[in-house]
Image (tube, rainbow, N blue to C red; front, top):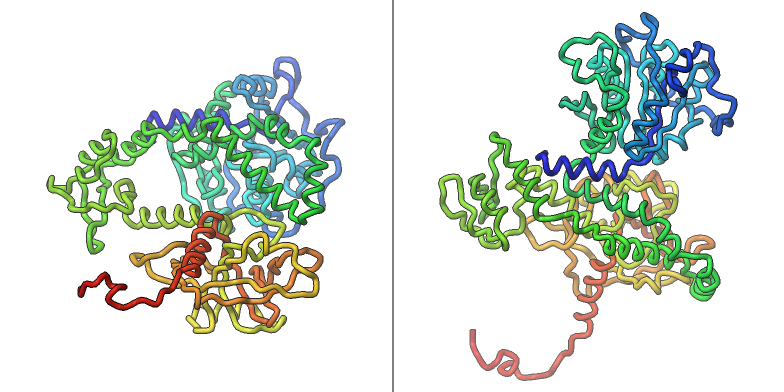
Length: 583
């Protein structure tokens, strides 16, 4: 990452971060000059806002104790206090609110890993943990880390950075214990070492190991000791590392703007509007969808008004690109005609970045010759390997055409509804006892009874369904094609296999499938069977849900189908139809 891009990422991180929670049994809330170190049996405090503990959860995170205790634990020495007052002042100087938990009893240690403080951790941007709590050698902290990064909980996803801030002299050992534990639990992560600290990096979280000062350490880790006064700056830099990049930084900055403008947004949705909204809901039965559309459009207007898009400037893109090209071992490439991969001169890419407008015909191969590629669909491989470039293009393609998918990552309490833009897999007639897994296996074997379908039911006709009367939903088949052929949509199926789909059906390909409303709702809502959302038609056919197209993509297909249906057929001579010419 170049210095310019790093500066932007740090600025975005500092703008976004608001709350830090420190868990350390040796923290001194007042200055250490005024208060003696707390005894081992000191109580957390007279007032505990989380006094009612949650029910303990069973599972590997609550039982796991990492193997291999580290040398130099608190059983072998007494740690000096962490000056909470100085730390609070340091974080306040960065505009961050800092809170503390000081667990010094067995009950308080158990509360950390049994859900008592989940709501607090869920709302915290950064969690700072001592490694040794109340005399153990990292067991409590390990269990807490395991709980926090368990993505299946779907509740603690906001927490992106966990910082281990410890007096333990073996910082590499701390990282290794956590790394072994998390890999054993199935997390895909890699180790990171830089001037900012030792890290464990996964797709959706980052763990950094930093040392407290005043402890003798090997020379290789001396630079990782961070004074209390410098901890806020280091944490901001660590958080920036977790979200570095153009789009991650843009998303972080956008979230910051939403939080900054929350009062304005709330003022747009005043209680004065409730009578009109209730009236709309009673008359149409579409209050839920209408409210979501209103808030989504208002958020878009807010971001546009705040100039969120201005953060993606040509200068930052050029800085990012030059950072990628600075690796002398990397060779930029571009896919030429007939899928041939051609090496590109890095100097010509740098020259390209300075052009306005950009002229891709100026790109040169490694020998200084013209590439001979005029119609560019992607130049992503100028900045990463062809394999990663392809994966990046496919993921961005899915993001741009799907509003919701099986693997979007958003936690959901409501299953999807059948509406315009719903992508389905059509299965055979099934009984309630038949496993959906069997259906998926049949589908993957390529059985002819399975096909992709796209629902073209207008939104207004997808709601307010009668209780006892089925409603027909128009569907068109989607052709599954290979990359390189004409296609329109990208999706991942239930096994995370990529599906490349084309929607070029004719009116005579359309089918009408009857469905009934789901329970008291006036819509057709999916039912989850074996963790797979599915719809069952009025005739017993099974349809597995794949995803939902973004409205504009669904409307494009619907418009094309309407155009084909409205074609005017004429009785005319063949000579006239062909303009009087033989070709």
